[in-house]
Image (cartoon, rainbow over all chains, first blue to last red; front, side, top):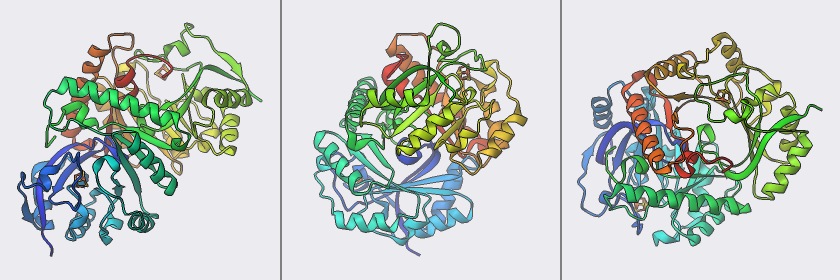
Length: 236
Length: 236
Ligand code: SF4
Ligand code: SF4
């Protein structure tokens, strides 16, 4: 039994982004990441400013029940990069046994066999603005292993260079559903009104860019709904 | 060859709501509806204030190409109620032959066999606030005929009574993906800032309601993205 460092358990709320956008869900946020994205909006999971607790899968299921009661049937495991934790396999199985679906998001840098048991897998390779490098051969294997499962690609876009990166990713994996997401470049602001107009402006920019590009015909362009509603507040 | 009354063809833009939210798509809006919802946001399709042109499927494909060029691979057929037009079957086939996917939205009051050829079918029965009555036996047949196809249910919510209606619909068809959408009760305002804060406030209310209800665990709660970005402007 491998214990999992958990930063926070909260919900039910809605999933604000990606392939199951809008889904009523609980969140389990795990600590630790093998990346250091320049614009990481959950850097407290790896930069030492947050505190995690080592929990067993059974402990996490208990916490979920305690907080969410009978008001959930879907759990999103986020991070950090949840894929660094082998123990999540047990959590996913325990939830499945109880009829609860799961979703996970990872950059696709580390494989775990339990990925294939997750209902909705979002693979989010990081564009140039993150200052990270994508190992495309590793990503090929990842995508290949998930090709018969319900997975999608999501790229967060801050600028033109990121957009070109997204085109390249989409071209390399044309069969995988592709999501473009507006980057939030003000992850620390508490000025919700100005953040909102900034995000909607950036979203419109991203829509325009996707609309112009014949390389991006079969994409979905989305904002982060939770940020539109709650700003940068955590745990909602 | 049955011609189709078309009110507008526009795009590419993004689908702002429902099961393919965010999808880059062209829109074909057809005229006419068998309903008269109190809060209809496209009443110009049936109240005589808009003008339609009778077009063949081939004409529509030409218009789509003319306006969208090579920048689309998805077409959304909206209304009004597109299901009143038999001729749409030919349009859907012609698009499919060209590798273009289609989506349609209908309240589920009138069946057409071409529904089964559409890639994404949204069935949106109307809640009490619309002042329309749902014929649930008719809806049963509709859902039954689409059960092996990619369809979803969407209910627009304005108040508590609508929410109870949505719970009833979800309970009746638990296998069908269920979307709750925030109603826009200011379809005529041009005050975009106040509309935006009103819609986000209503969206938060709807999230809270869904979160509270154990009957609504497996739902997706969504706003209309195009209204957040562009207000009540048409043709974007
Ligand atoms: S991969 Fe995700 S969690 Fe890790 S640093 Fe990048 S944005 Fe943050
Ligand atoms: S069914 Fe749709 S188009 Fe027809 S009146 Fe109602 S909202 Fe308007």
